[in-house]
Length: 229
Image (tube, rainbow, N blue to C red; front, side, top):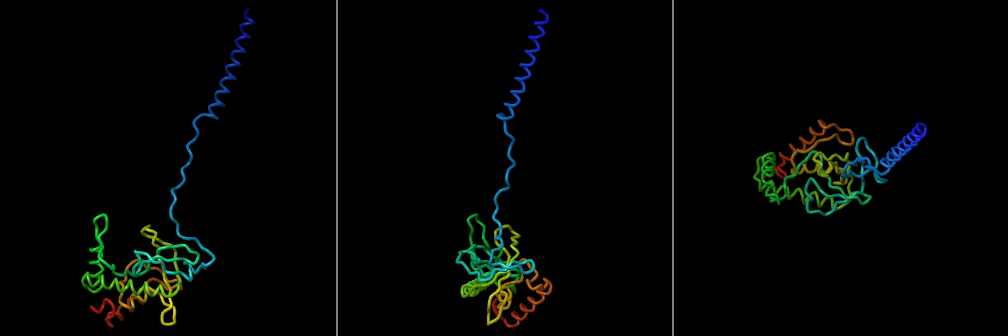
């Protein structure tokens, strides 16, 4: 009887062991699965290079760009179509043109204070005169860019994360290549403001700022644009 009891106990232990292994395998295959690692949220990225792009220093160069109509287009910011059809909003380096109209926004705010600051920094003119100058700058820039394709130089920086990318805009004016931001200063339609950057040809920020101040001084003496008030 004792030998039989030991045999039964051995079989019972073996069955319990097999059952425990089976439960473990079942738990691993049917139990709670590990939590997947979340992917980062999708973000809107700057356009990558295409066949119409050639690098120049730290800039990407896009020739044959075109202006697109948009209600937010202004003297220093506008919607642009790249040669491959992509659409981006560009913001000029170095310059800020005044607001082209007094605005009330849905959240109850206005742009009145910004216009007052622009007026104060453009010779102490009135807000109304600043808006008039902004309207002139808007009409000048949009009519200029509508005439012919232009070239943009950009590093795709958007410091305010608002999907407006800083750029240099090269156009043809008077039979020669000109930077759009220089023309705005030259014609007294903008103030020196916003982010500076080295020119694509290697001109440093300090060198170019000195040149822009000379253009502004000449415009002031000639009483063109905002300096005519």
